[in-house]
Image (tube, rainbow over all chains, first blue to last red; front, side, top):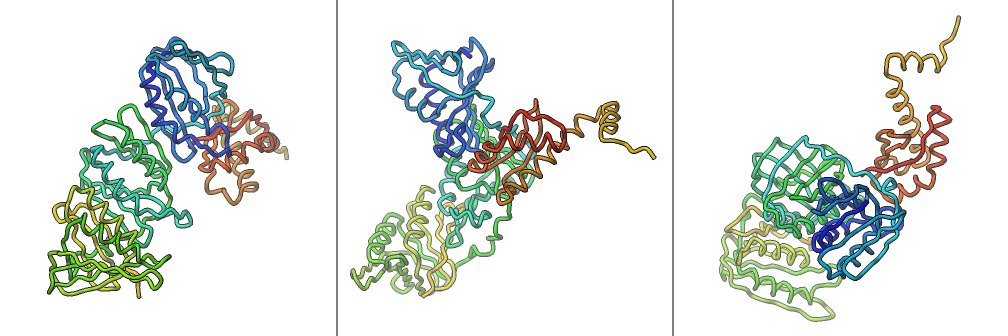
Length: 370
Length: 95
């Protein structure tokens, strides 16, 4: 194997691909990235057996071949190089890297040991705007459960229906749902992408500058193609809970107020919430056209902030976990909205946060029962 | 009455051009049996896929389990040889 490429290209590819490489010593070959020089360019791939990422970069291939190199070491070294051009030559089990005046050799392993990345299955294919997908994943992945004992909620639901992609995630205390328009729609299909894969997909699409992402899925696999990057993940086997009925179609009380002010008030009240419970009380008053955020801690003291709001409906109070409220407000802010709508029916029903000017995102929080 | 041996069946299958597929299927079944008996707790995460060039390709989602299978690859190959007469050279994983 012998090839040359630019430091910028290989460094970018290693940033995208290298992080998947497993750092745990379970299967040592998983710590490596696969370098494959072939006619179409240089393919760099890594996998942790749950997720696989493959990227092709441009370069001059003088001799075809493939080899694997420790991902972390290669990424750290390439990142330090200042030379524009990098020449790589494989000799026995060493990759010789020549960059300007620097010569290095890195020991690696034969590519025959490296796990195979499956061919992309194209049973259902869709195209979506990258920025929209990035926003949707950012807004929903925070609500996914990290507890793998309930695999059906340890991921993000991708539901393709009626030219729309609905992303939803829940950890059973809160739920985030985002509806996105598809640029190229296909047939109806539902899959659950594991939490870690969703996070990794988000990281990768944040690093790319491509306008469109092709999403291809089957019953067992999801693949996303963004330019020269191919992302493949297995799926969670299971059925995502039927959550639609818990989203209140209309709350009896709704308060619209400034996002930044509410966020500060909630963070202030959080300092006085009970340890382990993280409770804050939201009191909406129609007569005063205000929302009061308050919390009490027997050891520390208490806090109360009255915020002006546009209130519709009757007076209501409910107690929520401040962490979930903070996450919800931050995700509404991503909608480029300066105001947030809080819908609360009563102290035992779920509350809902959304942006009035763009209701494609809903964030539902279960109250803490007193 | 004369009995038909496994060898006779394979010879007939070879004549009809199906021997390789049947043998591969036997190998997959043997690998499946081995994995189910030795890695029963993780059997949902393991699936033998195909044999190519004496290498058995297994889908495995857990790197820890993959490592345990790797450590016992020789034992797996020996079991497959004993059960089917097919020589495997090693194990490779697929996502």
